[in-house]
Length: 297
Image (cartoon, rainbow, N blue to C red; front, side):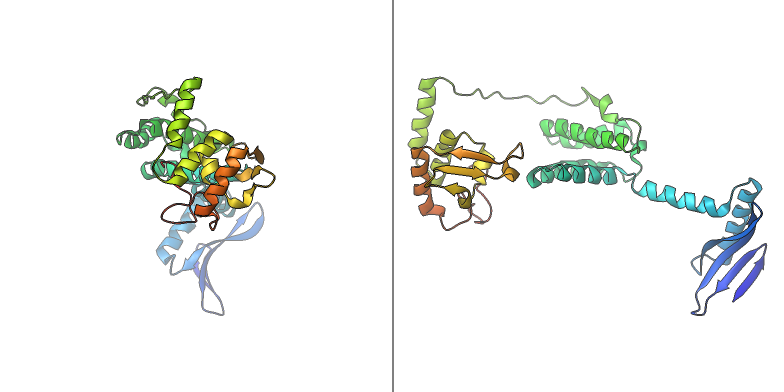
């Protein structure tokens, strides 16, 4: 059933009782219509106002139906045009590129500081002072290095937004020199033979947790990164062949790596097996055997 309100505004009533406002009109010599919304969500007053707006478009030679389609597209783009949306896409891009979950977790954690301060609106309208205000909240905690790294990460979000056509400039470029430069405490490597020997003797004489001592000794014998050793699993080791096969997922370069084990390293692993051989990890944490020891050990 169709009820007419005049001016080509109609209320269509379906067999189920639902009611929909429609505007019948002629455009480019063809008879057509455009839906204006369902009653009662769209009241009679609102429907009449929408009719007048549609007539104003027709007077300008614009098809109201096509205009509504374009408006919906713009709204959809706007919803996916915020800093949060672009940041989420960047994280997914990094995941497709094979970045480790630990790395992605750090990226999301850092971006969380920016999300708290930058309001959810089109990324192209965000200014340098707004980004600086977000960075200042991190800097105010004394985390100067984190603030500098966050600026670089936020810049990646804006550059991805530029590449995908959702903004035209990167406001972080204007913030160079605006943040406090972190003071780096240099820790030179021990390269003198006598000093290095003293370090190894100190490790051998360590009176704390024996697993910590073994971890330090294995670092010196295998030349791997601390994170690679902390997350090592017993299934990766072939003590008979004296080889440690580190999977690609735990390597910085995302390639599998084989580490030859010296006889001293094999002996240390056999000693360690008495402590953690029943676990998946070589160095399980104190709170949970499914998590490795802290990097601060």
